[in-house]
Image 1 (cartoon, helix red, strand yellow):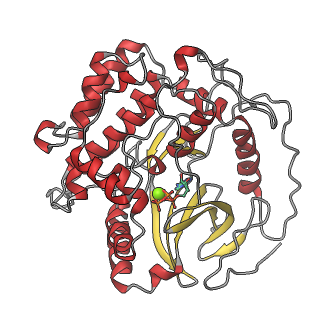
Image 2: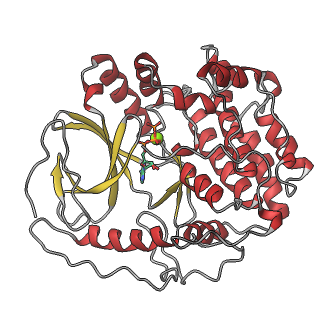
Length: 404
Ligand SMILES: Nc1ncnc2c1ncn2[C@@H]1O[C@H](COP(=O)(O)OP(=O)(O)OP(=O)(O)O)[C@@H](O)[C@H]1O
Ligand SMILES: [Mg+2]
């Protein structure tokens, strides 16, 4: 264990029981590598600090672009004023070891790309009420940002521009959090310049693809795509070439999700299609209107948000067990200390509920889930055949992208 600092260009990721200093933080392991950055589990180096954080460190080549850095810091500061239950909290924007970073609250859970991919692999669906609830919370977070005013009372006109499944995180406590708010414009501008925007086209609005001026309604469209994909377990817009994909988005000809999932009602079809209307005038005019229609539907389902928590824990049983173990170790680890991890439970049971950091404590261990979820198949075994009703129909080759 180490007071070894991370070196320029290459960061030591640390581990839950092996904290490595980086600026004012201890790195406690790599969460994932995204397109433009690496995300680490971290903790503040301040004495007594137990809160887990996620530090998103931009790739070194971005730091060479002065214009990018300006934008990144300007937009990042904007992200810090976004305090809403559906938006990940940004704690700090900074620079250490010649790397630019954003420190955020840590959300123990999975992103929606991972959830959709797991559902595809298991040939199972996100239950309709869960999908509607997730989309409603996305719309709620968006509306908060869209309508936020600055200290002078003037609207800040924040538009996310990068609402996509990889930027929606579902916590093991059932929270829905939008990620990457605020920095999208800087990232998009730069990624478009160096030509790695490709993966982003599938979640853009027609006006965004055309390079037209954008307002809040572009985010409504992207949220509508996510809703459609959660209902169908299929990618909505895809194409063999970038050009073909962009053409599809421009035309925005969308089939009602009930064609793929007979549990989708006509009301939900209507909401879903209105969110992805090609012409902005035909679309929901605000994310709040979309959220209101979705929440009205949820009232009819008698859905309890706790079911989302159970769903995500069941869908990622092993990962959840590991998360509990790692988080516990990470919160206690101090440099120089040797912490022996307790062996991971191998009972196949979901462990007793321990609240993830940053979310309210649970009064009780999780109840038996009220929805049937197939556990991941054991190696060498295929998944048990799913209930026919829950088996997505349609084109199955469009797996949601694997993490790089
Ligand atoms: N605050 C956070 N807490 C926990 N995990 C996070 C947090 N922020 C990001 N992540 C996870 O880190 C991973 C990488 O995120 P990142 O934003 O770098 O990549 P991406 O969203 O796949 O691509 P993009 O560069 O387009 O944003 C994702 O799985 C994301 O859910
Ligand atoms: Mg992201």
